[in-house]
Amino acid sequence: MPDKLSGPDQKAIDRFLTPFRVTDGKKFRLKDIDPADTRGLKSKEQAVSYLQRGIQVLAEMQEKLYAQDQWGVLLMFQAMDAAGKDGAIKHVMSGINPQGTQVYAFKAPSAEEIDHDFLWRTTRSLPERGRIGIFNRSYYEEVLVVRVHPEILEKQKVPKKLVTKDIWEERFEDIVAFERYLARNGYAIAKFFLHVSSKEQKARFLERLERPEKNWKFSLADAKERSHWNEYMDAYEDMIRHTASEHAPWYVVPADKKWFARLVVAGAVYETMRPLDLKFPAVDDAKRKDLAAAREALLGEGNGRRSGGTKVRQSRKAAKG
Ligand code: ATP
Ligand code: MG
Image (cartoon, rainbow, N blue to C red; front, side):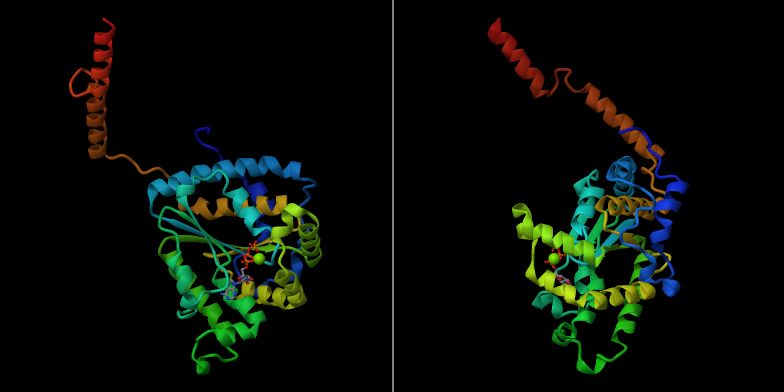
């Protein structure tokens, strides 16, 4: 890897990121984002060079994040089924040292999880400082699938008198407060809604049915969920309007073209880490002395004293002679 790669320039950020970044939800409307948008890029090939460079820059930043061990990075992915969450995570993180990342997928909660408050299971899975934590789904399901399906809320064990018509507003407030708390503790946060169109989702489901190697991915339950499409879109819009903030922005990523979604996600991860001023830790005088001493000790090895390798060579020589 070259010594230092520069990230995307301001022009690229303005073109590919700014239109999809929401830091203040008041004016946000989902209809303003076209799932098929590619900001004028015509093909995957045009996106590839941007993406490759982005991935290298991210790898470089992640090494420093890890070495510095102060900031944590939290990336959350939400989407309708088949929007490409898994692929985006896989591609964008492909250059990154697996030891520096922690990925969690959140499915329908277990009995133990339901026995706790709704932020419990994700809080336990927050990344350590120095790491990038990826949530494939997150506590945001609590204002999405749970809102679209009131029967899920009924099965949760929140005392009945606390479940009022204000519950969604209250959850939004709690999430905003929680994310502000994390930001104040040194967590950089980005939230992604991979916004696929209903038409493209249908095409991807049909492909899963038609191609044997993709059959395993098809779920009848996912297909049935399509009948709630508009309710989901309303829930997503309301969620973004209430929970977008400067310190925990939403990226509403056009996802009908997977290659474009990946480009936007890579750029957004870069933008999330850029303000952290990541650097390898500086070496002070005491450390420099330790390093010099260690160097001498290493160079002094192999001069006959206590060196197994030398002995073996000597005894081989002796055997030959
Ligand atoms: P893929 O289908 O690509 O493997 P996925 O994220 O869709 O990935 P699934 O196991 O299919 O994984 O689905 C997880 C399901 O769990 C989703 O339908 C989601 O809405 C549901 N889920 C996640 N969190 C909660 C929650 N807090 N309450 C209820 N359901 C939840
Ligand atoms: Mg699924």
